[in-house]
Image (cartoon, rainbow, N blue to C red; front, side, top):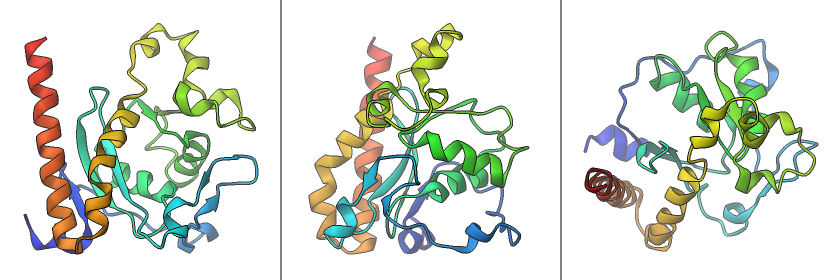
Amino acid sequence: MSNSKLQTGCCYSLPQIHVRPSYPHLSHDAKAELSGKRGAKCAKYYSRYGEQCLTGGMMCVWCTHSMCYEFHFIPKGEGHNDVFSALITRWEKPPKWVVYDFACALGPYCMTWEPEFFADTQFLIDAFHAKGHTKCTKAAFLKSYCQFDPRLSYINSSAGECGNSGLACIGKSISYMSQDHAVIYAKIFLAVWNRLKICKLLAA
């Protein structure tokens, strides 16, 4: 594993093809995102890590088969920029559908920063997390689109949540490790995880 991955905590299988742009005319771009209440309308809270003096955990990109494409460690609370930067720097063309538990705010964020790049991307909240977004528009809910696009009903929208639940197995161990060891440990765990998923698909 390269020293850059150990130092940055970023382990991406896709090569970096773009540099994360800066937007000097957008005042919020230079400000760090804070943990806590996310937006005036969204009622979801992310205070677990900050209250326990831990890092912000890991941000993973999962496919619909619960295999991890890439991950990076988050210094503080998870924010829009974590997902935005992963997509803008690694994808030549973004996915048509991005299912994320905070898609209600990620969609407007991405469209404000890079409207041309994300013009054909839909940002959707899976059914499991939609229950907690009582103040958010149903236009951000995956189930709302399933009524008009049958293809969306076949998406395993819980794939990311399944993968994240698997990461819970190593959360406590990683919290006691140095950064180098934590990155290596997580990388090996996810490599084994992906291999087991592939073997299961081949056996089906």
